Length: 195
Image (cartoon, rainbow, N blue to C red; front, side, top):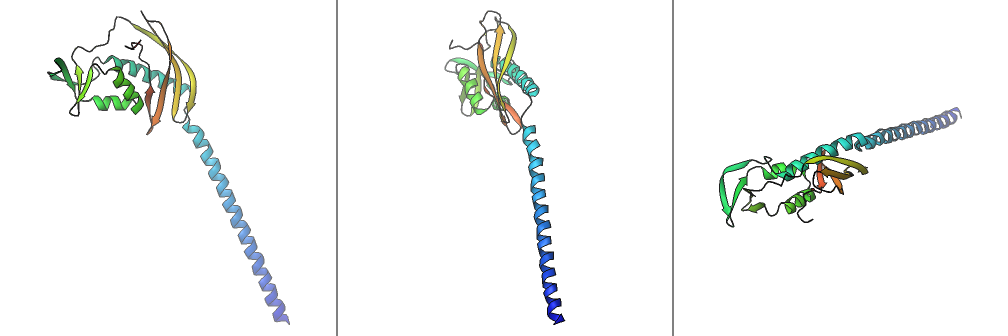
């Protein structure tokens, strides 16, 4: 009779121990999941750039865009000229590298559309018309920026540039994030030929 009581008691004890082990394992795993959620939440917040850093990035990229749109001394030109449609052109040896480091594919299309009369692509090479410097009679003064939106992969500000001889207008200036780099996705050059 005692053997039956002992073995019954042993079985109950084993079941209680298994239940306790299961409970502690469940608590440990629940605690671990909570820790993971807490750890990832701040990382998401860190991915969104601060207003101050976004504005600095916008100001820096805006000036680089203005300088590149002017074209003067921005690309490495080969010494010899070549004729294309009875016009003199220089071959640019670093065009794609320079443009792709600053612009997204959308920004590059906008850049190339603006310069379509003076930059020519032919036989997988890029050429710049020899007399292609933007009219600099109008002098750049400054640009003011107003924040519109900031997300982890997009910064949009309204930019208003002031030049001597040009009326100041506001346009969206957009940066997009690609591989930890901020690239210009939308930019309005104040010397637009279509206006």
